Image (tube, rainbow, N blue to C red; front, side, top):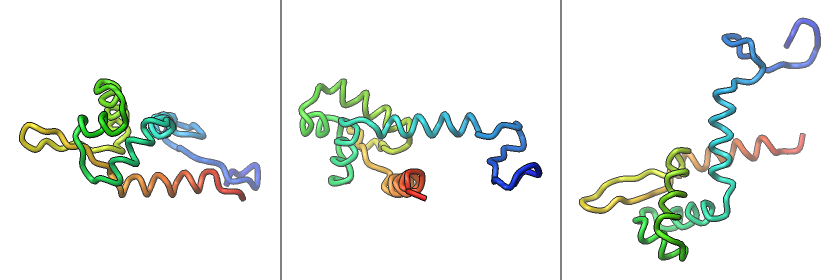
Length: 113
């Protein structure tokens, strides 16, 4: 709480800002990655199937391979999707633990007081 009021204030004492701009930017990237219909479909598909190749994904969703790859890259950058090489294949999967944590945080943010 600040000395001049009884209202709690966010505090980032290192920079003197009320909101950590770097953290806010990363959070925005994450939420933008989730807030897209096709990416939601990719997340659901991977969640239900554990691991898939980009070919599996673009065939299942009936999109171009390049479109699926671009959206997977956005989800990887947000650390929602992981990839693993197995021989000549690259398998994509969901970081389920991270997705559950994100969902909990989003629910807290939008909860009615």
